[in-house]
Image (cartoon, rainbow, N blue to C red; front, side):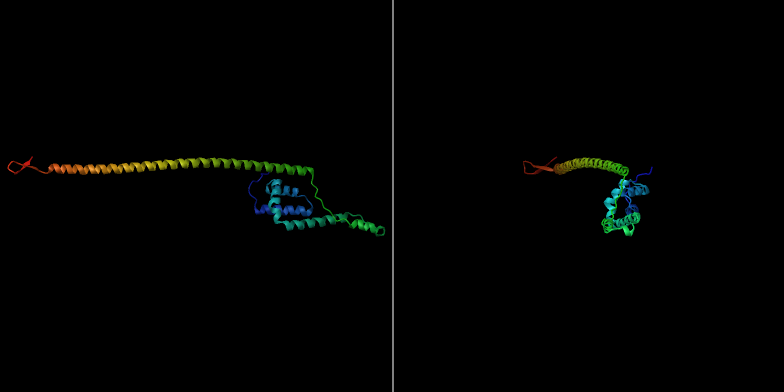
Amino acid sequence: MATIRQDAWTADDDLILAEVTLRHIREGGTQLRAFEEVGERIGRTAAACGFRWNSFVRKKYEAAIAIAKAQRQKRNQARKLSTVPAISVDHVSQGDVEELTKHEPVSEESISIEAVIRFLRQWKHTYQEMSRQIKTLEKELREMEERLEDVTKEKEELEKRVNSVQTDYRTVNDDYKALIQIMDRARKLAILEHSDEDKPRFKMDANGNLERID
């Protein structure tokens, strides 16, 4: 069983699809059969080929499609003329001539019920596969949105913690500076008191003389 490709279409794939489909149109075949042939050649489903043709490739080959349809009409006309029985000129009336020439050749593409069912089944398989892929992508999107919401909450919580730490740091820093100032003033006062103790002290006696006090 051939592996069904899931990769993107290449320029060569599009060219094969266009060539085969135009050939089937020109030769009077069905597009469904063309899509099946292309699918067998490039490893894709007929439904995928039909979707690619109708959504992208056909728009690039509109002129070629018109030419292929004209060639098919000429082939059908020639085929019909080749099957018309020979009529004796002696027995051809004016009414017979008008009856033979008043109808323009009409071409129809015969599509079997089996081919239609096969195409619809393949298209259903492609649709189901695309639906599964869409559901998977939607699930991944929801998970990413939930993860983004969690990360956003975590970021806000970290910002609150950072702001709290910065506030605590400023408070501690201010207290530290105040403590340093207090210690500096205490040190200066201690030095002054020590200096006053080292200075000699005197008192005046009854005769008016200064007397050193030890």
